[in-house]
Image (cartoon, rainbow, N blue to C red; front, side):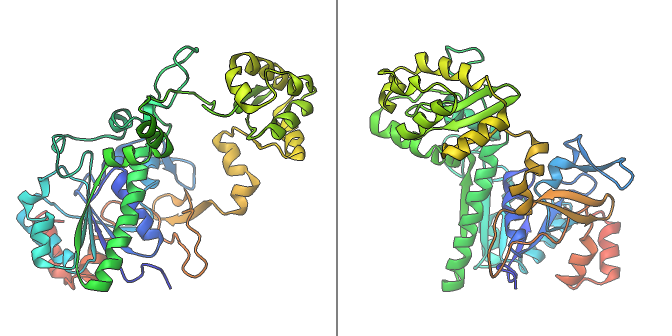
Length: 406
């Protein structure tokens, strides 16, 4: 039994936010049919290196970026610009519960594949549009990209080292966080719309915007600004209200120390052989440590630099002081907890033999998220889907190919 085994999704999206959403639905059991351009496919198929290696270690043409967001799907190539291709997609819509797309606002209306046109064919359709700025407003016609929206939506104003320190200034996140969060919010919205449909028989249009998502995910920082009217500042790896709550360099790497109260701070400096720092009047309470941050942190940095990373972690874990390493990715995937949780998987692949991927973190006891299908080759399932879902004969499929429709 799969949680979404009764759901079929027509995925017209590409790059990351839409495919990430569709991959979530596939992991939960939905039949996701990924529509791609004949001969080219999803833009991310060309976003390499790196590429997945084959059994001999030679590079394939399967880009790691594409592989990250497309497991569990079936790929069908359709020329969306041709009238026959548009007609074929409308046939598929009739057999689907969800349409997911991330074209510019109004683009699909010219093909009769917008929500209004498809709702006329299927009233209970759940149709999710993902754009940079939403379906209305003065920016609706603009193209939106994760990097731009991280800046426009305020994330970069609070990310990065303090301006007065070396390397200070705004920074984007190391992954396309706004795209990923938009994909996650879109997943939740689609599941809510499907529940509404199942209760009422009514479909609906979901309007997801990268900018909306970025503003929403400012969370407590956005709320604090609205409450105070004051611009927050960048703190790098430090915390605005807690000291010490930051990274420190060790002899052989870095650690994070998150001393959330005075007792943890005292144990931290005692473990480092500097108990006098706990009794210094400037540092005895957290408000005082925040006030005297610039005096305290250099002293703590000198202390931490005297020991190796693993030595510090062992000492602080024994004392109950929250701490941890800053792992490189080889260390992440070798980590005993990550391995125990099965976060690395290998799936059979028609070109690479097997591909290594990251497992979904959604662990459900009765209907677990599963990853049975590797990210598909371009058009790998075209004949299968046309035959299985639409009942097309071999002759009909051959005729579509002859006209370059698929």
